[in-house]
Each structure stands twice: as C-alpha cells, then as structure tokens.
Image: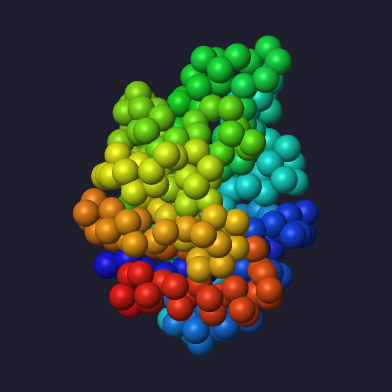
Length: 272
C-alpha cells in the first residue's frame, strides 16, 4: 500500500524552495496528522537539528512515521558534493551523508541523495564524475544496510545535473555498482521534464524504485498543474510499489492549502 508523506524544511538557506511546511517541526507534524498524512519527510540543516529524543516524541505523539531525510543542506549550506575534484572535500560530503543516514536510520528513514550528487565540470569529466558517484553510492549504500533501510538516489533534470537525468540511466547506474542497497527516487517534477512517458519510466524503474516525490508538473501540489496521474498510479500498482508518495512541492498558495491539495489528490489516486 502506498503511504502519504509531506515535506518539512528547517533550512533557512533553502527558503522559497519546494517544501510544503517550514521552520516549526512539531507544529508541522500536528498539521500533517490532522490532514491524515502517514509520514513526514525532513529536510534539515544537519543531523540532530531536531534532537533524536524530540524527533521520536513528536512522531509518536502524532502517530507519524519519518519517511526520509534529505541531505541537500550539505550542498545548499556547505557546498559539498560527491563529484568534487578535491578528494578531501569529497570525503567531507560522504561524511555528511553518512551522518544523515545515521540520523534517520534508527527511525527506519532512508537518506536521499539529490543535489549533493554533484555534476561533471572542469577537470572532472562525465566518466570521472560517474565513477566518483558510483564509489560513494557503494560506500553509503552499504553503510545504510545496518539500519535495514536503503540509500535513496535521485535522478535530477538537466538543469540541475549533467549526470543521471532519467530513470533508465538511474537503473544502469545502480546495476553498475556493487551494493544492492541503493534505490531510486522517482520525482514526478523531474520526470515531467526528462521522460517521454512517465508511466513507462516507472515500469522501467520497477524494483529499483524506492521513493516517490508526488508533485505536479509545475512543482506545485498534485492537482495544480497538468500532470496526468491515472497512468502513473496504474504503473506504480503494476510494479508493486509500496513506499511513500511524498509531497516535495512549493507552499502555493500557502503551506496549509498545498498540504490539503496533496492529501486530496493522494486519496483520489491511491485510494487511502
């Protein structure tokens, strides 16, 4: 069964980015639960930004799960990425992601690698960048195994990376590395840009799909753009996807309205 999730950002440097709730973790959880969400996805500036004891208390109080933790603050705040030409800087990027794995892991929440994957540039050509990325995914995917959670890797659109932009290329990357503990994040916004057929791409992803960003074509809440969700829902059912559909969307017209729109769309397409 697909479960619902909504994003909460605590990263001031990402202000205006595609996150539904902002700043107040406990108040956001209270609102998410009132609307009927199953979980929240946390975008935090660093591990323990919400101390583990508080995180556990708030989630238990509101009967919510932690769907995933983002690592993008490593790029937004510290400019760390996995394809940096400097080995020491790459090591710092890996250490930051490892710390986020250790933060979310005890809650059963995988860490997401999106913007921290980096890109080919300057002295680092595409082959070299993919080699660096693959090595990091191997190391971090194996690290996540101790928590019985996968590592989540996100193909991005062409304006955000020049490495992996499609699900098919993501599958090729995952099948080229040693670990079997990395899954793909299929983000409908990025897919709307890069995929000729989103439903077909999801089928290509198949068993490799580990997380879904449930959002519309304009990065607003599902139902506020021109996305056709019927074939997407059918494809997810066909591949047996039973993870989260998480709203990584702009707070337009407001956080509350975006969250309400998302849960309405979730119930329409996933029947819960």
